[in-house]
Length: 246
Image (cartoon, rainbow, N blue to C red; front, side, top):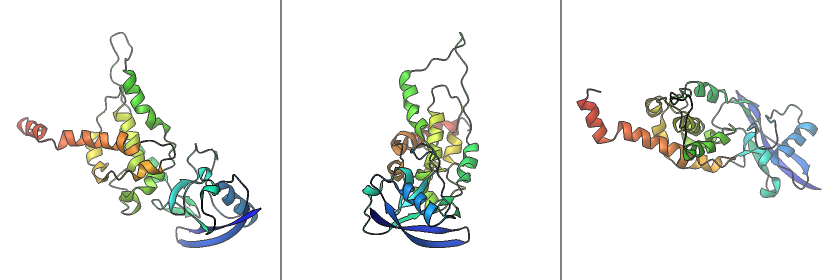
């Protein structure tokens, strides 16, 4: 049976350091398997968040060799094991203990986004939607809120602008509402100002990190940015607003 070495960050809000563990591995194991094996046999106080172990709950997000990944979907046979495998918590959020971070900011910021507001029904009491409009927002429903896109976003990770920018996950959520064929709410002013959509420079790192393969940048963020630009920066529209006293 093969043996691999893992460098796992151990610590809390006050700080920490990497601890090194060696453990036996079997063919087909994922990173989470190895972490739980170390927890069971060598470090019973190792904190790690996980639930479904099937890539659908988004709980086991961490950074594996510097890459934001779901530990349960990262196979060891896809990682060079000649060197120690480094596992650390997401860097965009405060650490709680070991591999567990405090992601509650995402849920608090989500509450501040204007909720779905359906338009009035047709005279017969029904709503009619074009299938293309329905299909457009289905992709956004795949999000498992692993927050890996938030973790890799440089605005949150490097600049810590959590109070000024909601990040790619919540822009996807906003796009799901804004592009819904029945929604009648207006969120563009919030997106352009309080939610800071202008901070995104469309590097597409969030799209690359998404385990559900949502095309975050092209299908959600860019269309929202285009809508904001059309409304607030189009010179003709600005002229009409000035003439109308708006």
